Structures are given as structure tokens and as C-alpha cells.
Image (cartoon, rainbow, N blue to C red; front, side, top):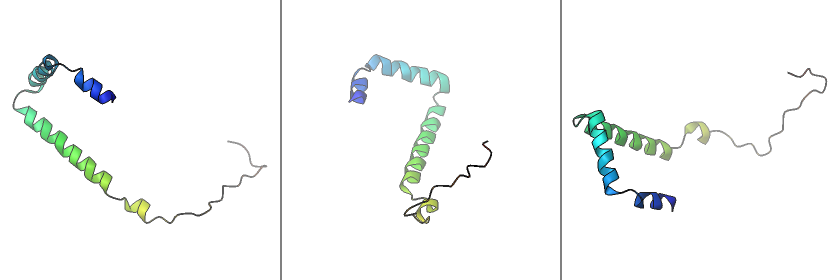
Length: 77
């Protein structure tokens, strides 16, 4: 809901101003490269979140793990 409110509060004048600043900072030729890199990063992130990590998939699940025991006579660190 907050996102909708924020999107509705952005005026066309603000969008045009931000576009002009981006063009001035990066130049017209570098903008497609910039957005291409952003798109590629988003695609890699999505594919990485969809994959299961074999590190966690192959690990056995402990039913009742025992807590580590502490020696009352051991020196404290």
C-alpha cells in the first residue's frame, strides 16, 4: 500500500527531471549499457533464488540435536 502511495505521489515533472539528470551523468550512449547490466543482474538474482543449494539439500536433518555440554571447571574466555 505504501508503494502505491509513493508511486502516485511522483509527478511527471519529477520523472522528467530524474531522466535529465541520468542523461547528464551517464551520457546517452551509456544508458542502454547501464540498464542492460541492471537487467542481467536481476535475471541472475532471480535464477539464483529459484535454485536449491546442494549444500543445504544434501545435509541430513537432525531430529533432536543435543546442546553442547560445558565443563563447570573450565576457565571462562
